[in-house]
Image (cartoon, rainbow, N blue to C red; front, side, top):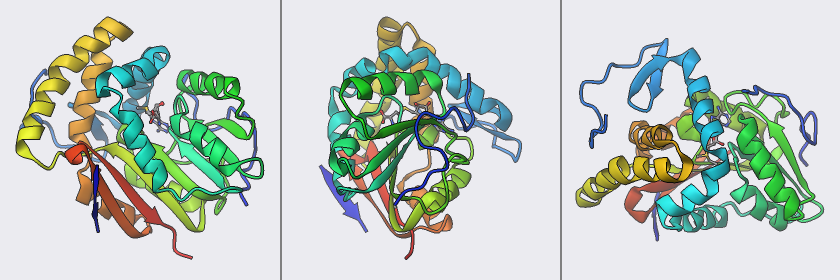
Length: 284
Ligand SMILES: C[S@@+](CC[C@H](N)C(=O)[O-])C[C@H]1O[C@@H](n2cnc3c(N)ncnc32)[C@H](O)[C@@H]1O
């Protein structure tokens, strides 16, 4: 499925309302889109003020939170479960470790980490969005995961977490939505222990042109229709399709991780590069 290229102390455990709570059907990346400046950034294909993006992303996830899991299964034909399983296999997670899942949403990864780290370990499921975190919290508590803390936090600062405090940090389908990705990668580096590992699972750039065309057609036609029918929200799924096209490609993201201080970075393409898992380490 893939090809290869190439003891926690958080300041406040348990459920902490810290951090930053929130309360073109074109098939191709737009050619003439305005370049981003220091003040602007992309929200899908729109150019918006950096200060506006977070609230717009919040609207998307607040709107879809309750239908998020069912939509994921429908849109990806269940394949997101395989992508996540593969990413987890690269984490090397072990009993007793302390794990932070950023932008963790409804908790797919945190649920597995909870089992893997066992009673002597600890998992933090963290997200900027209260609605998404609440769905994740209810789900994990119902599943009996009693070694998990739920923390509202912005990936850009990871303010609630102390330096050098996690063995493993993951972010799955979250980085794309973050306004300042370089800042977020630096924060991830800060909270990792020396020798700790970062895994980024994210949509990426398909490596075969025919696949890319079919995927564009699917994304810009089927996704908004499914979004409307199932979640009553076509726009959020139009944003999903657009935000994927605006996300840095595999090599660019690897370079960004290296710039943030990560070493031994590599990535694996999944499903022909529709998704990639990037891995990097904090030097000892
Ligand atoms: C597509 S969902 C991914 C959820 C989950 N990780 C998964 O793989 O199914 C993206 C998540 O990123 C969160 N998010 C967006 N911007 C964020 C930020 N700046 N900091 C932390 N989380 C953020 C959203 O609230 C949402 O829950």
